Image 1 (cartoon, rainbow, N blue to C red):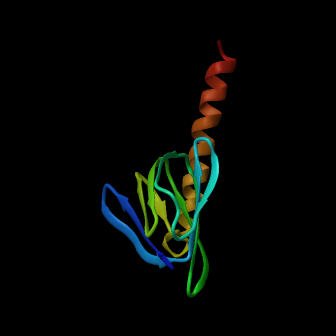
Image 2 (tube, rainbow, N blue to C red; image 1 turned 90 degrees about the vertical axis):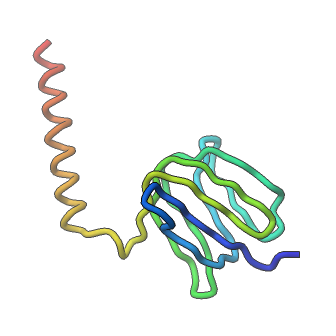
Length: 115
């Protein structure tokens, strides 16, 4: 019986995370699910959301894009285009991206209203 999970997150840029976890939770297209050691094998499509996992150091969280997850009794493999741990996120960059997205949405609204 497995007592822990090897959690790996892979992106097009390479391995984004490799840790030993006690549990893993993510958002599939069918809803949230969790994996504990000795989980039955599962393959699921993921939607954008948060990846929650627990290590010996405590509860952790990361943001991720859509992708796929494969779970086995002793491991969880995540394939996604986007992955960011909180310490990887710059508040200034996020605020700048939000402002740019708001400008683009406003331009679309103005274009729709003019038709």
